[in-house]
Length: 284
Image: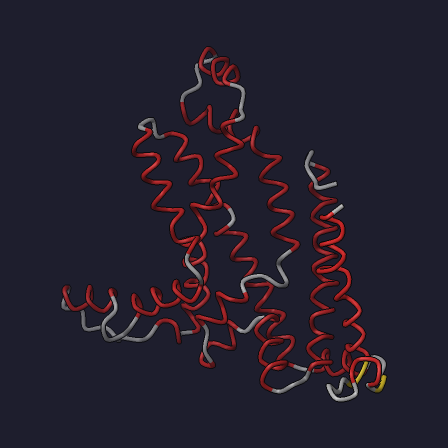
């Protein structure tokens, strides 16, 4: 019962504010006193080239995250499972869990310090090697910005994400491995034919949840790391809404963007769940 009450208060009750997407919201008049404008905010939204740029960047960046960052904890958990020394295993877990507890502000500080064209590690290595290449600040380079986002995401969350997969691996019946050994399977084939199929339902569920969050994730990471120089590849829907809502006061317009995000996210999670049910997974 407390869970239902909390969900209603913090997730369903605020939904009534969505109606300002169909109004010309004026803070003085309030939500109900503001004038209705119908679908004008959505018309303006779909006519804006900056919106479609943010929409494309959102899909591309999340596609990269799913392609590279999502499998990273799975691979890391499989590698940790092969370590026989408990001391080494715990040491590796502790080292890789640590970045997850740092905020993106701190992680962003590390990234800036590493990539700094004056005092960064890359510049220091270039100087050691007497390399005379250009000392470009990679965070302002459109060609490198998306790669930096993916790498920093992996660095921050790979250890934490591996916890769930390690728990799933721990639950695999040891008799399956004994049977595989009798059949002549080595460690690689045991991983391929026993461990991976056993944790596949967990992978599918987390993948469906990740796809459902495609339209609204990674806001803090991008907000900390991006700049006007990389808006063409780094500006996503969340940061687009943040800029327009906070600095330009377009509350109705940004609510329309948020509603669009929610509809697309809901559609994606429904499609992903339907596809996952065909391979034996799914959330419901």
